[in-house]
Length: 119
Figure 1 (cartoon, rainbow, N blue to C red):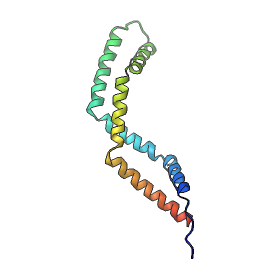
Figure 2 (spheres, rainbow, N blue to C red):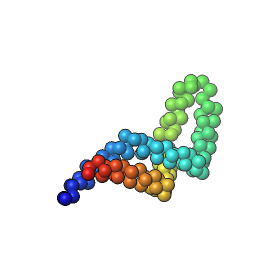
Figure 3 (cartoon, helix red, strand yellow):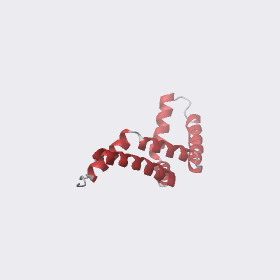
Figure 4 (cartoon, one colour):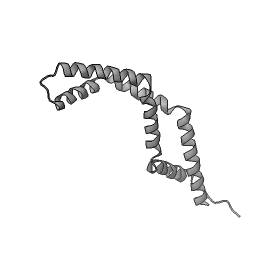
């Protein structure tokens, strides 16, 4: 009895598609963001933002809510350090063991399913 040919590239592609369609990456992203939201970094940024909001509101007595929101968005867009700090913290979170454990488990299940279907 000959061993059937297993197309590894096809299995990898199918597993990746299943992970994406199944929302695995979205789920991990949401969990990582929840962890980051509890960090000292985010609390510091939140405090900085509250101070900036108070400053904008105090100096914007005649502005509409939309204009105040636009000023806040402009502040956040101009503050690359804040965005970079948060992005770096999220990347660090993705390197943690809990992410790898979760992905390993999902990948193993999906690869085994693909192998069973290809035999």
